Image 1 (cartoon, rainbow, N blue to C red):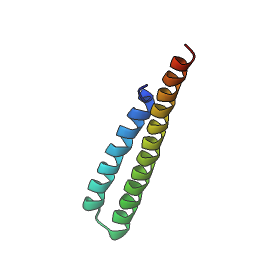
Image 2 (image 1 turned 90 degrees about the vertical axis):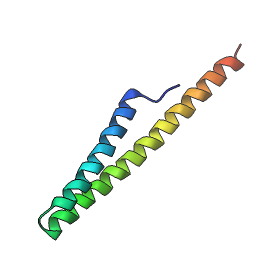
Image 3 (image 1 turned 30 degrees about the horizontal axis):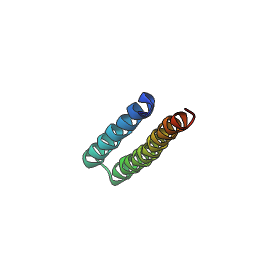
Length: 73
């Protein structure tokens, strides 16, 4: 079973957001602005990791479900 398309879309979006925040951190005119963008990038990375864990769980569930249906035959 493939991961839920929504999970994949969210994971991609978080990856893009982290990249954008890192870019903005480099362009920020103040140290405070840089820190805020770096914190947002870190949060996006964290959320992307959680979405990867969710995708792995979805794949495992799909594999277990297909194995279970074969056992029932």
